[in-house]
Length: 244
Image 1 (cartoon, helix red, strand yellow):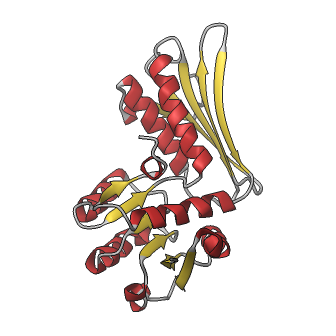
Image 2 (cartoon, one colour; image 1 turned 90 degrees about the horizontal axis):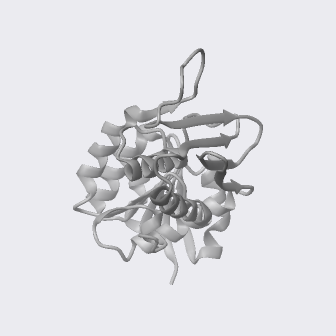
């Protein structure tokens, strides 16, 4: 049985990739909406909503899903922490929501391995995150990098204030309790993320390189199918893949 998808953000790169992959993932797109369209016109015909539009639209999309009892997959990034928290609070008790910064299966394995490595490599191994994306990406750091930084912070008991985004000038010696975050933008890079654990005499690097946007579309569709069977709550791809 096919899962019927209401797609929002259909004209973007991810929206186009999802439309191309839907049939291969036992899904069908019942409506492909973008700027100027009213998704409410088609919401009753779908089994789940996938949103890859703009972070400014997430709240209204979440309210639409909530009021119609539809599972929701959110793929937009760039939300402020308070805005994200408010959206989560409004829907988590009502509908299943999968909200991830990256829907690649490989990236979520990277998250899992980063958590394991961070638990083993504590003080004595400086942690840094480097991400690369195409020159049209609007936000930095990427949602994937944000998740990796969150994993590192949680492992080391640190806060967002312990993350340094880039370095310039005479910044002094690197504090022990610091995590570096760096963003590169250029060309048509689909996405690359590396977590460094730099010790004395050795360095460990965990890297994921995306070369085809289809991997994200496949993951988002997989999440939509999974969400259709889940209880109300907010999940990420680690839940979808059973990596918790």
